[in-house]
Length: 386
Image 1 (cartoon, rainbow, N blue to C red):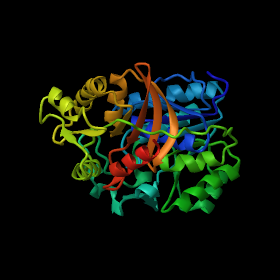
Image 2 (image 1 turned 180 degrees about the vertical axis):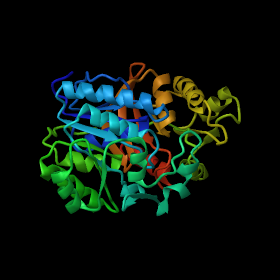
Image 3 (image 1 turned 90 degrees about the vertical axis):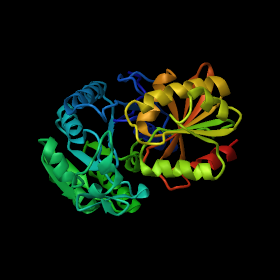
């Protein structure tokens, strides 16, 4: 393990891992994001995509526990477990594994992401003001999530005692009294709540496992005694291929909005792959998107198409919507590690990779994130940096 490693973060999917990396890099911390499961790296922060979102709970716990044990053995100072902002995945089992690896610490869980309209009130998650069970996530074809009461969710799959901190004052009290191995769930209705939660964690002086969304990692890292000499480069795009494999209504609306604004768009499966590549090859910006209705295997098939498209048109930037799609594309391109370069927009990190001997920029986004004009905003940001 590299001696410079100060932070280890774990995520259960690719867009989540890249988002954490972007937040840390934006805070001046040199950060790498990888799908490798070891700790060997030369960055000051390492984010590992453990790909546990769709695994059985036992295997997810095994992967998390193994990496957490390596971090403890390697004396990594700071540990963060990134969780999905709509509670998908194996959160209880992964928390149990973390507590097992660090039995002397409590786990502080901050599941809110107010900037993305994920708020937590009295332990209940609301998305766009609605209970989780009433949102599109409850109907997710690959990984539905319906239990929005976070203490109930944790207690159903984890043996650790669970407490609820309604505000920073309550958190300070619980950090002073909670037993090692317990979980403290923090409410959060606004950005100020996250800021005060981060301050309470650091003011306590108590070593903790910290878990939460991409929206909290920046507030948590801001109070850590870290080297912050990294100045993220200004990433721009000359030719950009957008790939949306997400079935979430938010991403599909973003693609339709961009198409209506004149960005050439081809829908996967509606015409032969070769015809799609030829149709988009002459444009500086183009979109490959799924029309919906077929989740099984779509990410891998789109990834193969992207590899062929890059060979044909030589794009220097990929914009990718959806964690499964991002992972499949990185695997198809043989990219295992990228360097984080900050954020274009909240929830839209940008990273730098090498592909076939040339630089390739990556802008990524979770499927459910963003307003209808998000893709157009991404295009404007990348073009204005050129």
